Image (cartoon, rainbow, N blue to C red; front, side, top):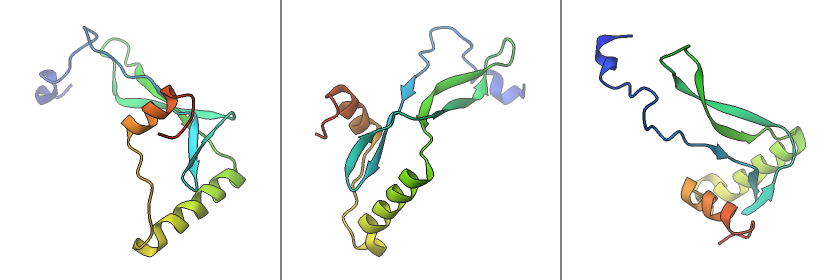
Length: 104
């Protein structure tokens, strides 16, 4: 490990590792539940012992139809920089997940 990183590494002591399981996607401002395949997300930082990567959560692996529908929706919402775009940050997504899947 590079000397300048030794001070940054916290080891496994008292480090809360986030676990964010995203099971929704957005189409026309509507959050839709995804029941299909998901992909795991790993931190680029590995554990000191064993070099295991740390799993952070997962996100939907949309099918072609859903992906194209979401892309068309995003294109319409952006409207070449003149459209109304729905901005969702992580906090909003977490609120959504805690509120029985109704958009706040």
